[in-house]
Length: 317
Image 1: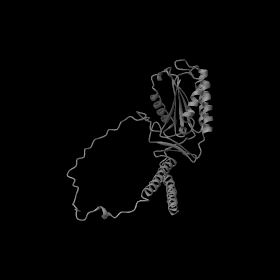
Image 2: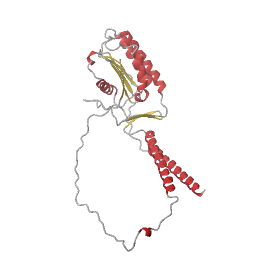
Image 3: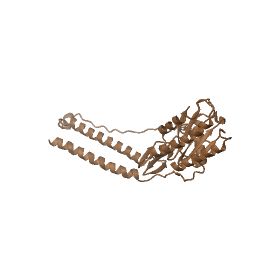
């Protein structure tokens, strides 16, 4: 009965330590707020709109003007920068990765780094397969994840031509209006609560984007809640392992009596010798490890102006 009571006491002490460490973790995670790089949305929609690189509406400027106004209204409604870029045949040689990089650079040069918004790259270049891309920055990375963007792409497939076919201006016009409707719909559906965490971004793997208490953060450190979960998990596992080791160790030696060391030692035949470890000489060889310029998912944006963080969702037609 006494042994059982000791086990319960040990468990109780371990639980007290766990809860104490969790309280400390909570304080550590919330302290030392990292620098927030987020620039948010200024409310200025003048730079949002439609860029017709394809020349699809060059003979119908009124339609293009109407689409431009619709995209600007959408940007104001969702509180983010929005651009629809209609790519023409001069972009036919673009690879998927280059298209992603192009939209990143275009976004940053138009709206600024670390702002909230997105660019929808509509591929009407005539290449096969056609590749549509949505490059997201800031809050758009949280509100429009890959699953949401895939739903948008599948809806847009109804209006856009399949690879190798010529576009129909009327259907493209209708598709852009539908795109704006979908952005507004999914923006209302997303509405993240007090905390939502987004993993490393595509363009800068060491940058993190998250929403906490309704505010968007872009930092070079993990979100406080995510750090706290890791600390909590590590400490709970460590405490459980320590408790198990303690119980197993006690059970192994429970029925073993202590033995006098002199039983195993003959005084007459015991000899002690002085021993020492001498380090004669050591050699240290240093090798320079070259860092690779590559890296999964990282795109520096090359040549200029691009230093913000972006994530991409792509789709082939």
